[in-house]
Length: 363
Image (cartoon, rainbow, N blue to C red):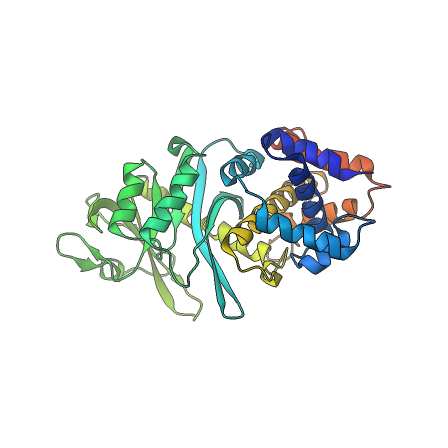
């Protein structure tokens, strides 16, 4: 069975203005990703188009990454449609980085948390090492808010790297509710007391909302919420958050931030081996991330569906024996590697991309 034409047809519904040859390439590339679970172009070239020399397939991959103009806004709309949720989003911003030789690859991303994972929506290569700055965060968030109405956001969560007076002011001005971690030495209130001192009496797992309502933090009037937990070194650490509203939900929402860390792990070591790519150009890597995002979303949807059909076992500590992403990826791989015998299974899986909400709800 030729899966390429069917997958191309699905993609063309969302990417109507894109050249059909490019959509066919994307269908082949995503299919190869699912079969091989690697972004190594030499390996993908062996599976991209049967009957064509690997060297020709390799050059085709290179041409796509180098020359094709990728409409990331349209692609973000596609990824957003694949999220089986309409509103009440927990939105997470974070950064992942690695090195290829002496080149620092540094990705800033915004996604929407679902369960214990995060669906990517927009991203940007920073072209430098280290933290993002306020202008870079605002520029990426503007792209995200062009796709998602702030009224559909329950909470925007981010770690203590993502703080600053102008940055928080931007979120407040756009009416984006947030729960963002601050550094423990951040000054709070007119007395400019280091935040950790206001929570020094807490025991592990205790939480406290500073009494008296909003406090002055980083130039803004915000609620301050804190707790203590056991850190990686086995010692108690402070977790202190600021939010403009719903302080009683701040810690719960912030803990969902870990979903984007899980996503990074999937894209890198536990799924598609992103760090194996030899790409270093920012635009090329951003395109590759788009294709990985599509493969991830499809796998995650199939994993959730399979968990409804044949629930995953749980280990003694209560965790699933494998992630729903891995459950879906393994199933899709088996289908894609045996399309002649599993045409019907492929057509069922395709429905996850056609109508994800209905696909999951009807099962």
